[in-house]
Structure formats: structure tokens, C-alpha cells
Length: 141
Image (cartoon, rainbow, N blue to C red; front, side):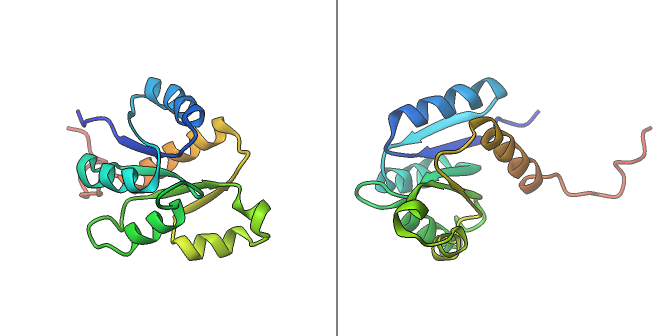
């Protein structure tokens, strides 16, 4: 049996981190928290998450900076990143603009539907970490 997938939630909103943890932990995920981009980077280096849920606007280092940094580092570039942010409403820039700028895998505007986000996380993890097909799995002995 494989170990639980690690979800790193990087957001300066403690309530949001708690809600996501309450939704994901019962589904068997190991939850790791960080309150800003610098702490998030340290957690990535030490905890080796399977997916990162990242707020765009945070103190010390923004989520956009952190996502860009991780996606341009050979060790971390394959970790899926879901960017949560309301910056589109403030900046007037499109989701495509911010996705390209940060290189995040998915961009979700705040406010968002928590249930849909959890289903999206599950789908990404299932697809991203799928066992490679060895050609034998379809035959039962």
C-alpha cells in the first residue's frame, strides 16, 4: 500500500488552510501548511509534497514568485501547483496571463467552490501519479 499523498497548502489565510485541511485529511491526504512564500519554499524542500495549493498574494514571497521559482527548478518542476487568488479582480489581467506568468498548472479565482477544488486536487493527483502501464495488468492469474 502506498503512503498518503502530501498536500502543501501555502496561504496567509489561516481559515482557508484549516478548511482545506478539514476537507482533505479525511480523504487520506497528509496536509502540510505554510503561511507565506518563504515558508512554503522551505516546506517544499523538506516535506517533498505531491501537490501544492498556493495563494497568489502573500507576504515575504508571493505565490506567483514561488510558483515561478519551483517551475524553473529541475528538482521541483514536476510538482503540480494550483494557484488560488483574487488578483484577477484587482489587476484586470486574465487567468491566462497569470498562469503564464507563474507557470502554475491550474489557476483558480477566489472565491471558489471548495468541493470542486477538492475534486480537482484528487483528479490531478490521480492523473499525475498514475502507475505506468506494464502491459500485464489487464490479465488476472
